Image 1: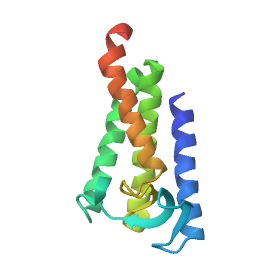
Image 2: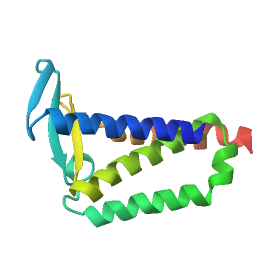
Image 3: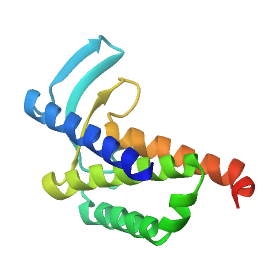
Image 4: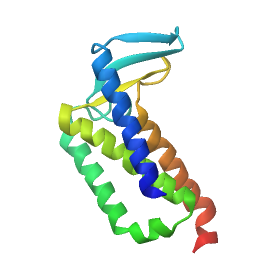
Length: 146
């Protein structure tokens, strides 16, 4: 299950970014629901909310460490509860997806724009949902599955 979710989410992330980069001009915004939800193409050179801008190598190192930790705990992840497997897969897929962007274009392609929240992408969604699933597992289910 881990690899299936990882591959599907990573492909979804990269395909949506490819589409946006090839169909929008940098900075262009398309209202889907005017003043509520737009597709806006930006390159984010920082982390969430633009923090730590231009720290490309730091973010690549963080992604590499995350992958190394997952590889180290692979046997535990592979036998873990579905929330741990899916959460870890989404987290890793998001880190790889944004890591590819940071390596290739020195920033991350973001495009989901809800106007009241910083612009984000599919990888960011995977990271957030993945963290939520892993935290849920750690605080709710871990004792039941050890």
